[in-house]
Image (cartoon, helix red, strand yellow):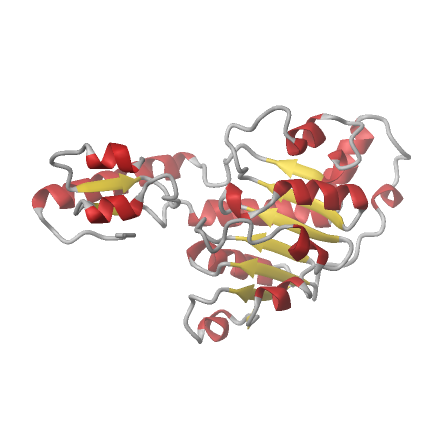
Length: 273
């Protein structure tokens, strides 16, 4: 919702985004017009965390790579096709943004034996101790040690392209990137370049800068073309990590309850502006 649309609203009390991200709403314009903007931040926490681990494990264990190549008759029917595959226990699972979803991912990654480290300057001290994980003081510190890097931050001016070519270059060769946050937080062009060069061994992307994507974009070309050097190491989803039958009902119900609170003059929850 743009400023023009918001300023044309004559009796609006609240704008509710029935989901986590609200970067498609001009929150500043809404605040100036006295309109609260609310989201529903907790409806898909488990599903996004589960999807994150599904992608990470499919890539790190070579499952997707083998499935993609052997189905097309490429290579021998042997595990060596995906080698090398290091053991994941003790490897660093880096998380950018340790809110509800990031914390849920941390607990799941721990259960698989990852050494979980997060970077989030807005989380108070002590979360690392509560979850039994480690904290990086800078993004660069996190990148330099991450075997798997997973993004779970909102899209803001600060986080736009927070991971691009310079950041990927700080990661060890043969590492992985997962993006389940918002499309604009990760520069997908640089991800494809890193997959082609071999610097990244795999990438799992649920969200893109433009949705639905342009069919001529580099990420879609790599994903669809079996001859592309990044094809076998790229997983894409159509912004579906949050989805489950129960979640679809949940975010609609919670969004409706927020609207009802506004109409009754009751205190609102999850105001983001």
